[in-house]
Amino acid sequence: MTVVRRIRYDAWSPERGPAWTSPWCAPGFTFTELVASWSATTPRGTWIAISAQARHESAWHQLGRWASGARTARRTSVTGDPEVDTDVWRPSGGADEYRLGVTLHPSPTGRGPTVHTIGAVTSAGDVRTTPSRTRRRAARVLDVPRLSQMTWEQVGGAGWCSPTAVSMVLAHAGRLPPAADVPGAAAEVFDPAYDGTGNWPFNTAWAAGLAGHAFVTRLHDLRDAERFIDAGIPLVASLAYPRGALAGAPTHSTDGHLLVIRGFTAEGDVVTNDPGAPTGRSVRRTYDRGPFEHAWLDGSGGLVYVIHRDDQPLPAGSSGSW
Image 1 (cartoon, rainbow, N blue to C red):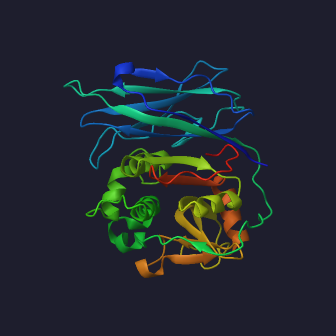
Image 2: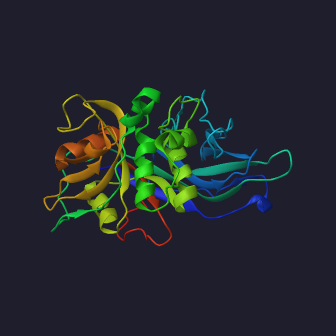
């Protein structure tokens, strides 16, 4: 079974110096994947660089450069490292301990960025192959506003599932700016090296600046997701599946697609807002629990974005994922 551990560090600022290195982190198992996430304020002309290192090696692995804004030239993933795939670090042979590093890059006028939180989720092992049993005794469905990425298909919307899903969750939290639209959200998270808007930590970094808290993690199964719905927090989930594997999906097959988990039926089936639907009215889809869980766990290892306000506490019952 997959093991997961997420570790977070809280606020620090330019006064602590231009570079920061976390203590060594030992998740308690040999991990094969790490995804970082962070929250930072980057005034105009400033940016941060995030990296990770395994205890057994001297090399640092660059996980991305971040600056907020629709037109920043500094925000990008970093290519050329065979162990880093855009937003995922896969240490060769696995690693038992790691540390994170951040470098602050001030503007020519001396203004500096501030990092509010930084953390990472590590994981290893096989995902479960049998559907989880629901925790439900009654249906619970959150009223998440509907948005379709396909409304903007002619200007690139077919590739905007991630910022569209994040926009829906921000709207549910009351933190999506009134004038915001999906093209604007896509510009806020676009990664030129990846040439797309699906960079996971870029999406949560943007959301954190609006909602207050956002991070990437992996959940063990849909029972974990049910805990978030019961706490009133919808999730953005990453799926992948072959043609015909997810009945009723507007995206008939995909190597990677993000949607909003907004609730569960009394039987445990998954109620979603799927931004791949052709119109806003049609984004509300309910998927059978088993096929959905398989597409999510097998497709991304159970990866989700968690986005919440200060007054939305995370659910109890974490087994290392949050």
